[in-house]
Structures are given as structure tokens and as C-alpha cells.
Length: 213
Image 1 (cartoon, rainbow, N blue to C red):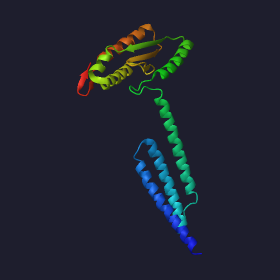
Image 2: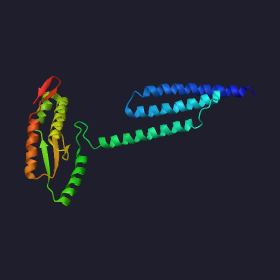
Image 3: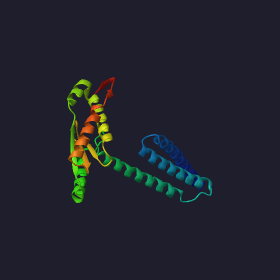
Image 4: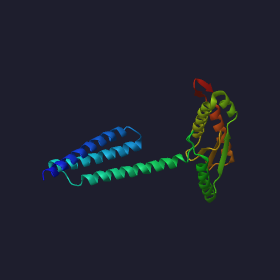
């Protein structure tokens, strides 16, 4: 009859060692990306709750009975939040160009449909401007594709800075950018196109100790 309590104590002690080991791994995982940190910290809370429950069983301490349930609840909520955040980031990434961070063609077309409907309802003008970089192949041939990528990122930032908050810009093709200008007539679109051209023309891009203008 004395064997059963000894076996129970040994099992509980083994579980305690396993939980401590898991807590150590959770602390290490908390140094990784944001999603891993959220889940790891929640698992750490669960491990502490389970360890406290084991201590209560071993030493008959006055520890609340619902700690494991609370720990599992924290872990579930953290995992759900992490999964939701990941879905949102993936959805947002699918709508933007990886290189420049601008909207991609699909996202731009969605914005165009919405802006077109608003323009028709309000009878206000709506303009599109297509920007195409001249002699871009020369940059790639001279500085390589990495230099071309640096130039495209710089151009994207210059265009974004030259527009209003309500304007939309996307990378339309390789070195093509499309601008969507709500409440803008032909004269205003020409003005935006010229100011954008001047902003791009004033760029000086540094890449690998080589500059290009």
C-alpha cells in the first residue's frame, strides 16, 4: 500500500521536472519573432499554473484549484491572437509589392473601382497618372539588379512623398508606377505628374559605394 503514494510522488516529480524544462524552452523561444514571443509567454503562464498545481498536490498547500484552467485559457487566447495577427499580416502582404512596399496591381485595381464609384456618385473628377522610368535598363546593366532595386525603392518613396494622403500609388510593372488622384481634374493631374517627375529627377541613390542620379 505504501508503493502507490511513492509512485504518485515520483510521477508528480517527473511532471514537475518536465514543466521546468518546458518553461526554460518557452523563455528561450520568447527571444524569437513576435508571434513566438506571445505564444511562448502564454505557455510559460500555463507551465507556472500547472507547476503550482503539482506543488499543491505534493505538499497540500492552499493553492486555488482552477489554475490549470486559467493557464489553458491564457494559452488559447494567445494562440488565437497570434493566428489572427498572422492572417492579417499575410493578407496585407498579398496586397503590397514586396520590393517597394507600395500597393500591387491587384490592390490598386480594388482602390480604382472604389474611387470610380465615388466619383460617379459625387460627380467629382478622378485622374490616373502612369509613370515610366526612362533608361532604367541602364541602371541594371551598370549597377546590377541590386542597384536597380535600390533605385526603385528610392523612386517609390519619392512618389509617395509627393502625393496627398488620399492619393493612391502602386507599382504597376517593372519600372512603371500608377497614381490614382481623387478629386483631381486634367490640369491638376498634369501638375502632379510634373511635380513627381521633378522629385524623381532630383533623386541621388547611393548603393554599394556607387551613386546614380
